[in-house]
Length: 307
Length: 272
Ligand SMILES: Cc1cc2nc3c(=O)[nH]c(=O)nc-3n(C[C@H](O)[C@H](O)[C@H](O)COP(=O)(O)OP(=O)(O)OC[C@H]3O[C@@H](n4cnc5c(N)ncnc54)[C@H](O)[C@@H]3O)c2cc1C
Ligand SMILES: Cc1cc2nc3c(=O)[nH]c(=O)nc-3n(C[C@H](O)[C@H](O)[C@H](O)COP(=O)(O)O)c2cc1C
Ligand code: FES
Image 1 (cartoon, rainbow over the protein chains, first blue to last red):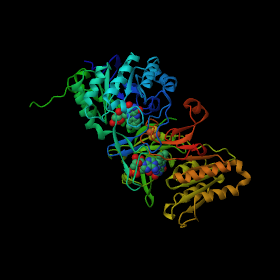
Image 2 (cartoon, rainbow over the protein chains, first blue to last red; image 1 turned 90 degrees about the vertical axis):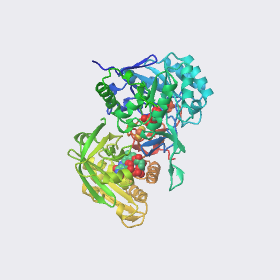
Image 3 (cartoon, rainbow over the protein chains, first blue to last red; image 1 turned 180 degrees about the vertical axis):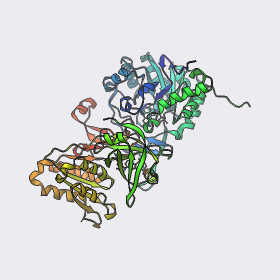
Image 4 (tube, helix red, strand yellow; image 1 turned 120 degrees about the vertical axis):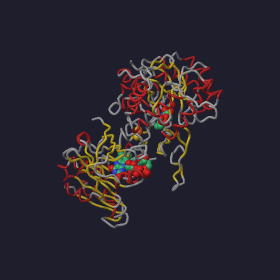
């Protein structure tokens, strides 16, 4: 009996459900000597913008208990350089690629969607409406339901690619946003992006990050992310790409069981580049042991205690 | 040459001063691949610390690679308790290297504290030119002067300065550098400066290099989460290269120290 690990996000077929998260794996080439790229379901690119972005001054990152804060500020060389210089490598190596897009205005998101839809080798778009570290756009679209609906509606009209909306956890009712995502015709929803946090240098009495605040990621946020994934799974029918602090096979399983169709590994790539391959192997082993033959049987298999 | 992730065994571990340690690890791959200026990300298994810690390659002997570190916080303090035979997770070698000196060039190596280990590996790698190397060690006090004898043993000339005058010249190491440049004014076009240490020192050394028109390579530090070039956390502001200018449509950029550095031409850095 073969085990099926492949999953479907809209039109996009992934050979396995283990992806690497935006901003945590570069454009894959950087990781070729330390990770097994052939084992990864999809690589989600670093956040792309229409024009090159310089990003925030250092310090941009700080280690925190079981996690880290980052305020990179979306440093990237812009979508044109991505298409010209990064995409060919991904294509040549048969790496399923999801482009993560970021705009300051709706028009920028539209143009990004158009340009990437015409590029050879992009399998899907992940719309980042949840970046906490840039002044305009980003998270504004992720915490205001009206703005969220408008930007996603307009992007949907510009692309036939699988469209994934990435939600911010920095809201009171995430289900409301997930329903908007589903309502405007997005194919899938991804969550979570980072939680806004802060760290202080008590000797200098100054914020450690130049940006003052940053996004918290890593194992510290995992229980929060699992809970939001579970809530969203109850609110919508579209597939969920779940993430937040995944650090082991066990952690990945939690996300599937509460309702994720696929998962993404972020911060853990920084110190364990082989984790995605380990999780792919671990999922297979788990399914075998539990007499399951398809990863989809695991998705949403949470059993609640009877009242 | 590209990097690898490996679990390695500690082969030796010695305290060499107040808070200073040298740890040796057995790794034929790392020993063979490491170049002067490069570093490793070193993680302690089961230590409940997220990131690896960056340490420069200090020395290579046979299949053994040595790191010299100072206890600063939790990571280095836990590392100092590790015994021979225990494991470390290493990713490396990472980053770029100091330039290979031309046979007729004279090296002025300026270092402070844990900036000295990569300069030692640099000097040792080109030891046949040691008589053309002058090492200037800057420290707060006598207790923080490290590697003086080791550099001498390579055949380099060594000078020391301390803030409190407890060893060598009382004052800044940049005074030693200025003097060395004056004393070698006849061969100024053959001089090459390489420096690693705290940022204020690197900034002053770079300024001297620019003023005297001497090529100056500095090795810098920033917090690093990955060491692989993917988190974009470890940046310093630099002037754009001509190609970058065209591609990015601006004059300045943030450069990742872990892969585009840690060694940068001093004149490229914009001090923030
Ligand atoms: C390229 C490079 C080469 C280095 N080479 C050496 C070396 O050969 N010997 C040596 O003793 N030290 C070296 N360092 C500095 C060393 O990485 C830090 O002292 C160490 O990370 C401190 O960790 P900690 O947990 O003890 O301290 P903590 O202060 O508890 O560290 C907290 C966090 O801040 C980061 N951090 C703190 N200080 C620094 C720093 N100066 N540079 C980078 N990250 C920092 C740590 O990685 C950690 O994530 C190097 C740093 C870099 C970037
Ligand atoms: C350094 C860093 C950079 C990130 N950059 C982006 C980005 O450009 N776009 C985006 O949508 N998410 C970005 N993220 C968020 C991650 O993709 C992920 O949603 C989050 O870190 C939670 O997962 P984790 O805990 O496994 O890291 C970034 C995270 C980190 C740590
Ligand atoms: S440490 Fe992550 S990019 Fe340099």
